[in-house]
Amino acid sequence: MPRNRAFSEPEYSAEYSADYSVSLPSDPEHGVGRNHEVTVRNSGYCLCLPPFMRLTFAPESLENLYQTYFRRQRHETLLVLVVFAALFDCYVIVMCAVVYTNNKLASTLVASFGLVAHILLYLLCKFRLLPDRISRKVVPYALWILIAAQIFSYLGLNFAHFHQASDTVGWQAFFIFSFFLTLPLRLMPIVLITTVSCGIHTLVLGVTIAQQQQEAIEGLALVRQLLANIAIYMCAISVGVMSYYMADRKHRKAFLEARQSLEVKLNLEEQSQQQERLLLSILPKHIADEMLKGMKQQESQKEMQQFNTMYMYRHENVSILFADIVGFTQLSSLCSAQELVKLLNELFARFDKLAQKYHQLRIKILGDCYYCICGLPDYRDDHAACSIMMGLAMVEAISYVREKTKTDVDMRVGVHTGTVLGGVLGQKRWQYDVWSTDVTVANKMEAGGIPGRVHISQSTLESLHGEFEVEPGEGGERCDYLKEKGIKTYLVLVPKTPHNKNGITGVKLSLTSSNGNSPLLINTKECNGSINTTCTTPDEGEELDTRVVNPSFPNPRRRLRLRDLAERVIDAQQNEQELNKLLNEALLERETVQA
Image (cartoon, rainbow, N blue to C red; front, side, top):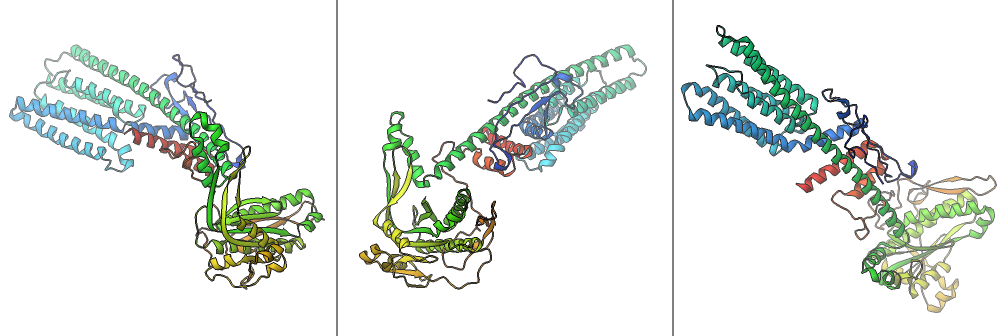
């Protein structure tokens, strides 16, 4: 579990550290996971604080992200400071109106101008009408200058005839303390601007009093009064620094907790995705969804629900494809067992990609036999054409293997259209399968086919819309079952198109072998290209999107869009900068929800 020792102890050591390790979503090329360490060091830039109070995050990118988060948190408090300044203007206007004389006109006009400026600034900040860069770097300093100018104007205009050492000191101390609580700046700039304001105010007040009382000046008394003002300012600055430090400490703790929470959620989300992918590699999505809904029953019924409920569905007007490798025995006699298994794995992996491209649902692999269905679970009007295109692509892929391995290996494909009953059987291990007489016919269509050709039935031909030319298949002469049932069959004529050097649909096959006496092995790579056909294919290329969105799985999409964030961490190779960006998005989402 993550450990957070940054703010858990009341006594502060010389080194603040918050170290925790969380396995983020893994990248297959970069190991199972990465450990991220965040350290709160005592090497901050604010020299006005003692060493044990100087907090800064390591790495620097995380500190920069925290400062952005801290400024956003203080955006609302900046509006409070604007309200304080506007109330000060209202106070000046009211006081001048109560005891109005001709010499109060200038103070009233200045206060009115300041009130209008503060109202305008409030509206600009409230509705975020200013660019972010200006509101972040210009507005705080502009507000400080405006407040300082109003205090000095009030000092010069309202107390023009007779100045005392206490004039506007209270207002100056109040705004100094308010700066520490509201300005979205780091501590050092706030200390500098407050020190400058207090120094100028003390200097101006001292010089003005000395000029007005040149003859009857009491130097020692004036010095004592000015020192008292400085003491008040120092107290206000000290209390402000401590308030800023406590607020900063609280925000850093919340920031660390948010970062830790995000990492844990990303990890849990990735684990949920892995479980989802594992289940969907065994079962079709519509079956998996239904089974998971059944599992969310009462606790006492879960075991019975998991293994005894029948999940069966009838699907009409679908096309079933069976494909078998011809010459597999000859190939196995020329290859070692390891190379043969690798060949089948890579070849069937290529078939799986073709199946997704041509909208096929692979049912299972039986030895060297591959069979799939199109039009299940969602009906497709072009299911027959897609199945034929799948068969042609498989034949073309195996022909390239035959050419490179110098063997008689080939593909025999049979397609039939009909009705199937699909679902899950078994009480110990889940297995999806389909059953019907039409499945048996499709199997016999493959058995009665010709190597290198796609063998289709009459019902499949009737489901086409003229996409392919066919010739009589005479399947009954090669299969007694087809002859007995009187099924009329056809062979698809492959259009005479220029042969793609890399194979059909852009299948680039690179052949390698660890044994010089053994046939070369197939390794499939994807490149652009497609066969000319009227079969509907995805608009995208052959690059497949393996992301699955299944709302019935645990840990569904939340407000933070954790699934998207987890995938982006993987795409970015889990670097710290990308994680910080995701943290920034998560914090913004959290603030939006809270608002």
